[in-house]
Image (cartoon, helix red, strand yellow):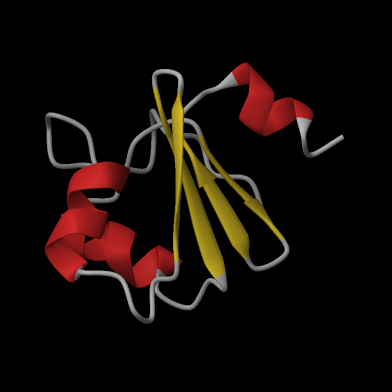
Length: 81
C-alpha cells in the first residue's frame, strides 16, 4: 500500500499506532541512524524520533515487510537494495 504524505497525515498517536506492530524501526536523523524495537522502546523517545516539528509522522516513511524506515539517509536506503 502506498500513502501520499501530502494527502494523509498521521499525528503522533496515529504514527505510533502505525509502527507499533513493526519488528524494528530504523530512523535516520542527518547522518545518524538509530534502530528501535517498538515493543521495548520508550514511547516518548520513539515518538520524538519518528515525528517532525508539526507532531506528524516524518516523511519519507517506508515499510519493507515488518520493518519501518523513517527519515532520509542515503546509506540507510542503499542497504535495502
